Length: 366
Image 1 (cartoon, helix red, strand yellow):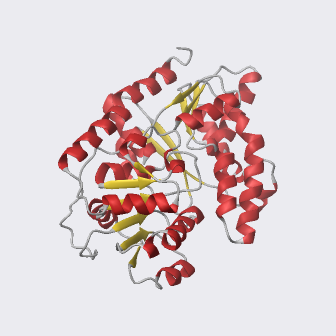
Image 2: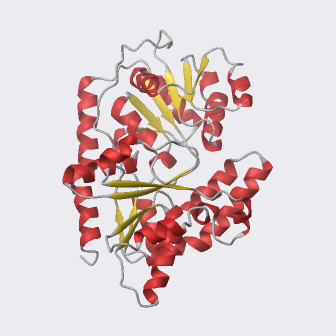
Image 3: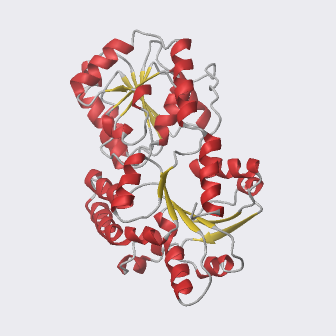
């Protein structure tokens, strides 16, 4: 989402873009071609023996000679998305040290990846996947200083920016994610929701941290209150389906269409979002604040976002239950929505963020 809407913002400003992207199963997207002068697709290298390299798999699998050759055909500045593409950064800098001209290269960091993978490993219950994630986290800890080779790093939160400075990155800016214009979904969409006000949890249910959050909420909060609980997200495991089916006040909405998910967010009296991973920027938080009503979160969900003033914070089960008891009987007013949208608009000043990026790409020493 951040990448796509940033591309749209570049296009509206008149910036010419050649997009290079990796694919492993998805078809070419006409929407990307509408934002860019040219789009190149590359097959991600998923050979299993790449796991034996010291380079993290997320970077090794995107080390592509054809991409490198195309980048060398001009001297345009380069914006790399994530640590995932930094083998290209490393190889270009190696060639420059051998006498080639220096390129302006900036990296948009979506996480402190070593932290993200370490916390994923902690949440993972399957032994083999846990071992893979833990090993990748150790590789990433050694590899992440590759970011020092970039002219600048664009962090997604202030907390991430501080970590990159500690790693030695000389120029780090916090650039919040780019998002679509705020539009309220069609609340008249015919979806099956409880007749009374309900609590919503939504997210990718195949991610261990989200499954942990659902189970924790059900065990420590929702079974002790009378409010209907809707859990919505894609690809829940069979064990999670069986677990939730035991509770009469809980309904699971599997892999909803985007329009249905938007309507659920808009209609839920309270959206609850908790995480054990204080990393990156949780885009579902912005979606819920943009379209939803009361948002109850734990502190880890807010780390480095600047959005605490838009949410109700609860870090224990007791505090969360008290917040629900307070908020569930209270409709979200038009005045509250307007106040929130004003706060979000100030924080997410797209024009200012875009100008910062363009200035770095054209005058990296500025």
